[in-house]
Length: 203
Ligand SMILES: C[S@@+](CC[C@H](N)C(=O)[O-])C[C@H]1O[C@@H](n2cnc3c(N)ncnc32)[C@H](O)[C@@H]1O
Image (cartoon, rainbow, N blue to C red; front, side):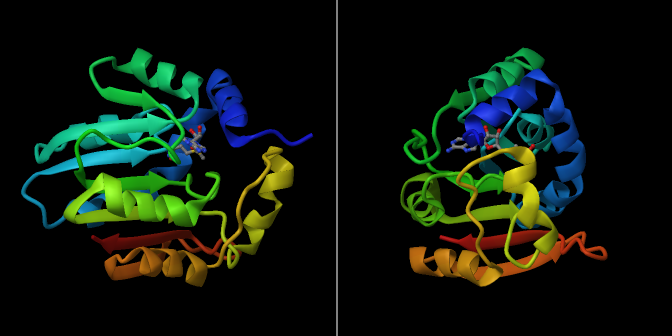
């Protein structure tokens, strides 16, 4: 029987599989962070679906980072993040309903948005309630239509309600929400692996 994503990732936290995700996502995330921070003198940052908080720890080392906040629906991931380094701000919440107290310059999200109940709505909400004017949303997605090798993941990982969209669908979600200067590219394409689909836009 398939389980919901939060439950499965809680089990992964218990099994230390979060460290494997860090290893597998690291190169794509570096590419995303280099892109999103490259022209900024200083920035505030949210990692939506932060897992054990490894991106928050990494981004906080950047002198230009004024504040980095991690949000994840899994209690186990968040308590792991707090145990590793308690000094950072983490929230355990469903991304569909959470909103930051203060809007930020960058919302980053790696391998998360297709698990939420309504990705299109969340991309809208981030535009309206999370981002400052000129703020940037940047997402990385490995489970997408063109990456055929990923289609077996709902079965192999036993996760229900994983939403399979094409690159065009994701771009249209950004367009529909009103983002400007939308760009997309694939990072790490190799043989049957089509790479991480990275999409970004500015408010
Ligand atoms: C594949 S993991 C990626 C974690 C991290 N971004 C990384 O790259 O290592 C997906 C994460 O999204 C979280 N997640 C899934 N659905 C969520 C939701 N509706 N609200 C908040 N977090 C969610 C899971 O708990 C999990 O930690």
